[in-house]
Length: 252
Image 1 (cartoon, rainbow, N blue to C red):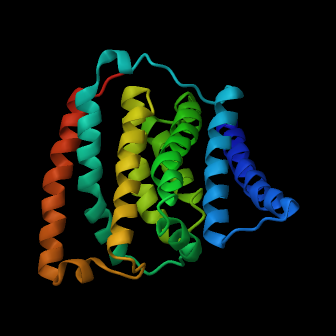
Image 2 (cartoon, rainbow, N blue to C red):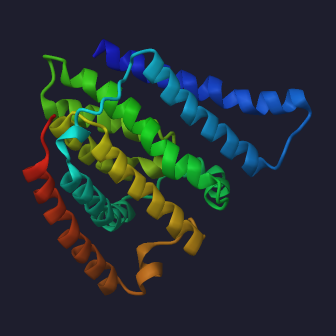
């Protein structure tokens, strides 16, 4: 448990310190591009820095052992599960009271720039899985005071909190439970990276197709009946995917 707290503090410190480096360097150099470019450069730098520090400091590790088991079916069903969970999760979130969207403007600036995909679609899944599952959850699972699902639930709460945005937290918590279960069953962050990558990629594509952060499912599908049909159809994708993952997932 103590290690998990240390890893969380280290992650937050990297975000705060690393997030000030790029703007400071640009200011010293006397070059200050538009805000979206600065934000994307900062986010990318923080993502790379997080991965480097956690790997070099031994707080997390990457091993090819799980890939040697040829887990292509697990990776395939991880992608399918990601596609199936998005609409039901969004629907549940819409049923809840509106939560403050503290980073809406920053998120918009990243998503409307094609280079923002590097930060959101590629680096975020890898760095967050490495930290939350590969370091924090791994240490929680080693605690004799916690059950496996207790550790997974705590890691999901942490995953929601580190998004620093109440509007994203319900979806992040639900996804965090799924990601935590996948790590617990495989001992690898790779299934989670695959699911996380698809989730963020869909968010990026949907934003650029429908650039309205206030859009609801009913705006997308046209009627409440169609929304319910979309939720049920998504569950017909998600539930078989979870079943297949349950059958196939194993540690190296």
